[in-house]
Length: 119
Length: 106
Image (tube, rainbow over the protein chains, first blue to last red):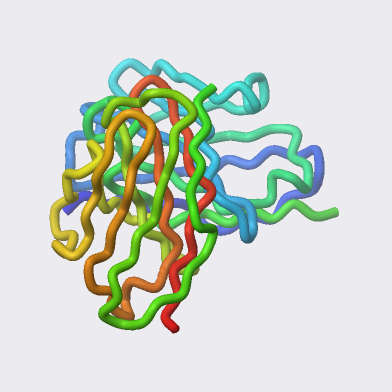
């Protein structure tokens, strides 16, 4: 079955970077885009961007341009999201999600990674 | 950018009730509309895509309808396990989520 398993919770200081991984299984990794979505405490869902695991090309939401990078390792079927220059506003649960049709739709989600930003 | 507006922000209904959640797009999005269900501490679960197509394994009491700018998610007979927050999402050439509707049992 399709699974997306994310790395564990992180605690970071303001100004630091965080790297979250999303290890996939149960399907052909290079055949489906991976998106990243975050959710601040008690808030709604915010889309961050996607990576095409086949070619490695990416697209980011405007509010994260210049501060986020998304990469992948096809040998381990794992996607990565790095967010730099963290502030308290970046405290959230970060999710990876699979796009079944390449249309910005999500059918399977990772369990989420909680990122805490605190001095 | 297209904005998605959900209503109501929350609702309370009895087991067995018919529940309706609406989602309005600021521009015509044809039928590129998905619905997700999220319970506390869990990731969203895909319910519906293309406005009315149920994802595999989703109970038939969940129904989606609409096209253009106005969409509806209906739970035809509310069950205790349906307590959750529901989000609509516009997809295809950009992502936009609605603000969510929290559904509780009366």
